[in-house]
Length: 232
Length: 174
Length: 91
Image: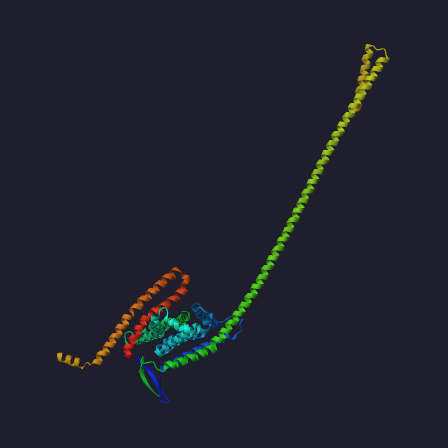
């Protein structure tokens, strides 16, 4: 937000002699995103104050469309309705947070939190642990561990690496897309002969198009990973 | 606490944990402010729509039932009317036929009556004629037998007789 | 001239060579690693488009599966990105 290209403002705090460092810009940006989302949620909720049998207003139509979109994706991806219902808040929040984070980069001087590897990797690991948890709950601990030596015991390292590669690729995909977009934008912006009109179009391309697609892909992959872990 | 400008991707730092905390807070807030009321609202509306659909379905069913009943009644009435009309037509035909039959019979009866009467009269006439011929013959014979008969007398008698016969015939014809 | 060049060369240390090698390796890694996913995603998009043109009513499912498949295809490119980042910033 304030810094030169490729640099970030790191805050070092020591709590009881234990050094802790934060990325301030990312945290402030995600707070802004959270505030925007909560305001959005409050606006959506305000539309629910009317009686049920009245004609739905515009905001309700938006809410309907949003919930329908996420719910239909979930119910068509998950084999069990219970899992879809359970995971609906998580996936919807994940999707909206990432979408808002990606879209906010269109505004000048606002950097998307998803540009930070910490954010994406925390989401990736969260999805990974959730998938393992749901798989364990569904299949039981014994069957869950037995799944690693199938179809043959010597496939064990391959299975483990395959499992571990998922959160990595999952989080690095989002990070790479957003970070790459930002770097492209910065590079285009540096040179005087390209810094006039191109950055606007490029900004919209990376912010709106790639951002929306990556938010969609991230939540879709989260759903797919959890579903695969639960089913197989 | 101090700040420094760091490289973008250096290592994972505590932003990781902070982001998870942020996300948990966001999840809670969204659940509290959006999902719960929105899902409850949508459920209520779905129930309302379902109940109204049910009511609409029922009323439609009843309307269909009523329509079917009316149709049935209408067809029954139509059938009734048709039957009545048929009956009337048949009756009329019957009446016409009957009257035709009686008229023909009457006519035939009258004709046969007339023929019979004519036949009777003719018989009567024949009888009368025969009787009068017999009388004339008897009269002629008696006259012939009672008188001196000459030719002129014969002639006169025969003429008288013929006249009488003619008269008789005239009388009888009348 | 030759002596100047020799003096410049003599100032190059092993660390400098390692840094240069890092940058070159990151560039090569990213460049070559981007070829595969690009081709693969293009093929996936082309076939999905074929399917959509043939059966427009299947568009939603095809689009979803295509995006999912492309995201998974992209993994190899992501791995090369990961290696490039590791080369640039960590090693």
